[in-house]
Image (cartoon, rainbow, N blue to C red; front, side):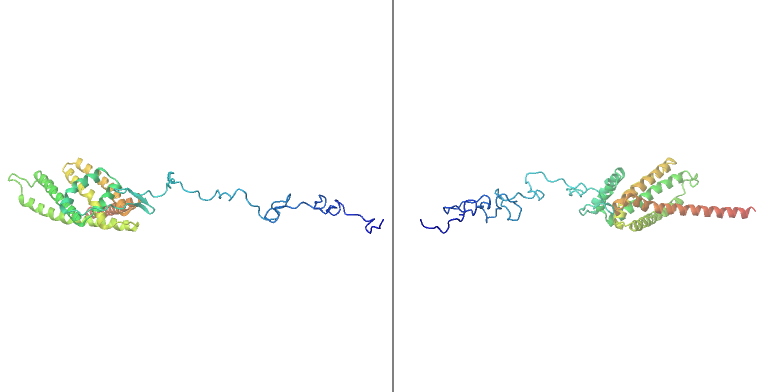
Amino acid sequence: MAWDPTQGQEQPGNGEQGQPANGGAVPDPGNSAPQNPYEGQGQPPSGADPYSGYGTPQNPYGAPPQNPSATPPQNPYASPPPQDPSATPPQQYGTPPYQQGGYGYGYAPPQQAPRSIGQAIQELPNQYIRVLTKPSVQTFAEEMGKADWAMVWIQLLIWALAGTIIGLIASALRLASSSLIGTGGANFNSFLALTASGNTFAFISVPITFFILVGIQYLLAKAFKGEGNFLTQGYTTLLFEVPIYIISYLLGLIPILGGIAGFALLIYGWVLNVFAIMAVHRLSGGKAAAVVFIPIAVLLLLVFLCVIVLAAVFYAAYKSANP
């Protein structure tokens, strides 16, 4: 029997080197782990943490879902979103409503088609009735677009003419009960002189007084940041002053009661004046009232001072005559 050089040395078994005696590849469960057939394809080995740095695992279900906070697609059949209640509503057809701006009351007067003088005169009675029976800022705002210098002078002429005619009637009534009427009849010379002076005074005093009053209010309105113009203010003022003064002249023919009714109409005219200033100059009620009543307060103060001065003069004259 021949000598074997490897005799007495251990041969690697299945548990030593991981190789079988016959040369087959059998993994050793004690020394090495089985290879992952998906290794190198972005997958971690078996039993490892999927977030341990072996790469990002692929999603077998396709693309991830969209971000739920993103803007959803619009539904063409859904109702429109609710509007902001503080936003300005869209303008509708027809006359726009009276609106309030950040600086006060505001209204854009509707555009009026050009009118002839005859048509404008025919519309005056309806305008007077509308202004007197529907007192509001919107009523004056709807009449602003009709302002015209020709109609301003025509209304002043109507005012002066009506005052003259009614004044003549009142003078005739007074003449009938005065000492001017004797047994020989009326003193027509005195009546004609009174008529001529009354006509001249009315046709001069009416426009002068009107423009002075409107001019003072216009300057005050501009001091309060008013946005109107002189023509519009004068036109809207005549829409209530002409009928009120004509009615006051007629009521003046009635003793006592006519005076009380005339004073009530005067106060009503002040209220309408406030509405007109609010509409024309886009002012709040407080500022418009200040524009109207500041001149009245100054006038009353001047009258009061004049009365005091006259009383002091008469008192001094009485004391000097009766020491």
